[in-house]
Length: 147
Image 1: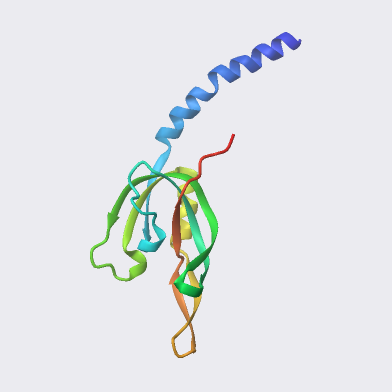
Image 2: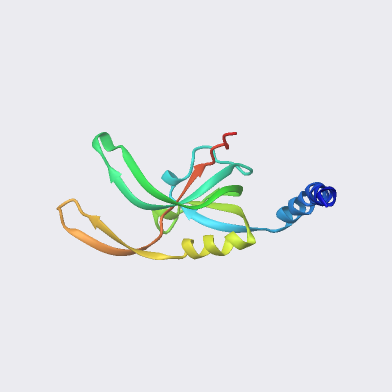
């Protein structure tokens, strides 16, 4: 009995991964994301691996240093294309990035990209204004996995 079990495991281990890799290459879609220039890494090119994050908070500290609180949306995505939008409607849509995403994850990314949230902004005179804006997304370079 144990010999058959080991033979079955060996057969699955040698045959199993090959179709999964072929399926992964065919199973990806392109998803467009509009970002502000401050949320795109410098020198981003096609083929680069990135993590897509949603900005949940922004703090501007002394010396105009900005800190972003983020939550992950999708990790280790491949960039298909990066283009700068000429005369964007708003500065938060200045760069168009096409990401190669698996079909199952594409729906999640599109849903979050199209979401509208309430944002509280403080003006220079101290008044507080509440606005409805699209979710702010941010790309960060993927960190290589530690072994």
